[in-house]
Amino acid sequence: MISPNAPVALCRCESYDKQILQNLLSMQWRQIGLSEAFFQNKKVALKPNLVRKMDASLGGTTHPSVVEAVAELCREWGAAEVLLVESPGGPYTEMALRSVYRLCGMERASEGGAFELNYDTAFRTVDFHEGIASKTFHILSPILYADVVVNLCKLKSHGLTMMTGGVKNWFGTIPGTEKFEMHARFPDIRDFSEQLVDLCAYHMQARPMLNVMDAIVGMEGNGPTNGKARKIGALLCSENPFALDDVASRLIAMEGKVIHLEKGRARGLVDTPVVIGEKPESLRVPDFLPPDSAKKNIIAKLSEIGDGKLMRLFEPRPAIDRKKCVGCGECVRSCPAHTITLDKKRRIAVIEPAPCIKCFCCQELCPKDAVKIKQNFLIKLVK
Ligand code: SF4
Ligand code: SF4
Image 1 (tube, rainbow, N blue to C red):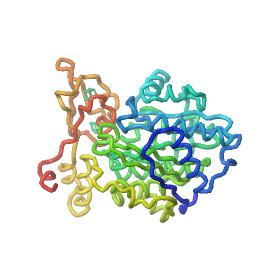
Image 2: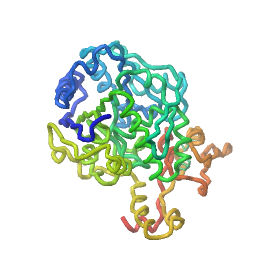
Image 3: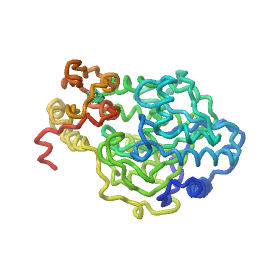
Image 4: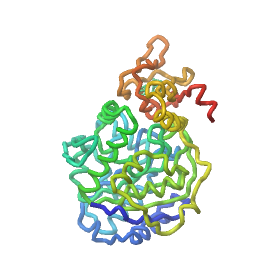
């Protein structure tokens, strides 16, 4: 099991130049105590954040230069195989993977031969008896086949979990649309976060992992896909994903606001991480924009005092922007509560509000940024 006191290497990095990245990564890996033995003759799986088809310049996906730099370094340190494995939002088929790899720049990055792209869509059931919310998971087979997994996460705001980084990126080891089912099983953010902690804790004890965070340019506002690219200028590494996120949350002024991080701390998965390199305060972006749904946290606090049903009336909810919606149906397919339909005549999506569990999968996967977060007028007054 990975130590709750595993150190976090943090350095300033404002460039996606591959050589610069390799120099910094190699320094950071040694700073946190790794040696060539970590990769020597190992089958390595790289797990980036490719949430959906989008260009890396938008700040929503792990930059291809980071992937290439890490893959080449793994080879240099003796890795026998390096395979990129990801289950993006939406269907998990060979065709869908091809299109995500191409548009996220992974196809081109793989041309240098440092890593291969995975097209095997098999998965297996694993047991995790220590789990609190979930004791079994379906995990992508190529992840289970690897000796070492390098989690290549991206630092972004997130409509549901407030922040996505090291811990949340492990959710992409669950095959395709099953992720939506998991949202449906755990409509309450506290339960969903518990399940995220279970999944991450499973991976922490299953095989050695390294977590590398691309926080050079992240995403603020309505992340993880519809926010704005924001320069943060940082690169982070740690064997412990909770420690990594603890430090990352301080860079974007989210400390204390991320439920899965607090739950991981309560379970003893992270202590107070030792930071090697830059001080988090020197790279902090104090005006980093949270997602519009951040008001939900205020409401969640109110719910502890008042009636839960009343609280739900005030929660931010998704709404379709009719001017932007093109009726592609992506949100219909991604909604775990099956509460979105297509009005074929008008070619727009329609949300039935009552069954909505406010998971914001529709917002995450809409390719046209046509799903907005609507706030109750009373909540707007709190702003
Ligand atoms: S809201 Fe977005 S995902 Fe849904 S139909 Fe409209 S454009 Fe497509
Ligand atoms: S409408 Fe959107 S936010 Fe509501 S349950 Fe469906 S996907 Fe989740």
